[in-house]
Length: 375
Image 1 (cartoon, rainbow, N blue to C red):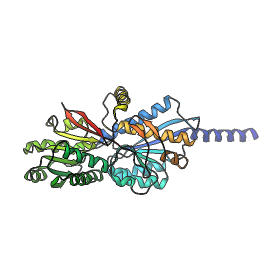
Image 2: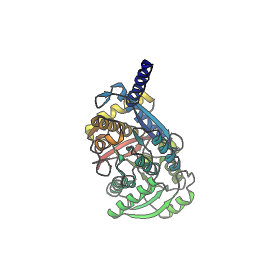
Image 3: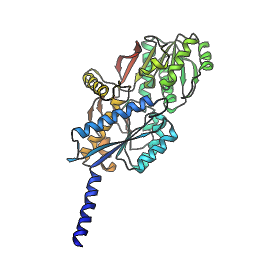
Image 4: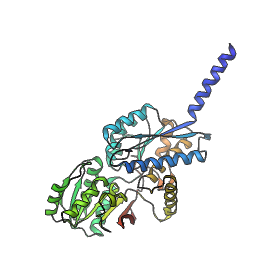
């Protein structure tokens, strides 16, 4: 009888040890819907990080662990995002990378905060995300204040824009970006001659573009994703609007060429990625892109290297704390100094990336081409 009791105790202890040896990283983004190409890009980056950690036998406080990715699809929808967040919280994942858009990241963040689970977004740029007072929210890209005002400076000083029309898609991301861009334009003394809005599922822009045409802009700034921007660009051409288009990272991928029906002229679109690497980091980023293509058979969209670095920063914080328990490694994450593919990962008191950079791009031959890296 005693042998049976001891056997049960040993099996129970083995079960606890096994649970401690698995670290589960939740990932949430749109894997279905119009922005699924970005969501899958983010998931792929996180998966590469988890695989790399397992391949090198990454430890937590000297103990070898098994790293597991727990992916969820939020469809790019705020309601679905909160359901996904609750599912990950109930599953007691050790951390979350995501969500993809500001509109999904912000409502989900309250659920992770209540559960005490650290969350790093690799793509959400709306300032509100880190302004809620939650000590669990972090991001590894610049926010819309940096992005919008950086684009405004470039539009005014380099492109020579004088008359600008702005359009947003009514999402948290689109509205936030347009607001900060418009604020930046005012600082540069440039006029906003028309302000319109659409939605993130729209396909017909005849009414708003007709009004915009009447204002005779030399630049149309769009706050939203390329699933909308591409068709809008095509319809601009149909209506004889010869203005250039500008936007943030939501329109900053090679998908723009296809989504515009091939109507995008070389140099017509200028966009910015909330992040990027300066010259010293270019070789590392090139290696990452090559590894990504070898693994998945496709090119990086935008988010993958940032979600990769988010996972790696979490792993570094856990190792330094000697624990994957959120309450124990969260203080280490807040003061982390991690040299990643995208540059140095370090956060300010709100959880925003310190010294975030922007990368400006245009398109040539349908492919994204870097112009400059700036702050």
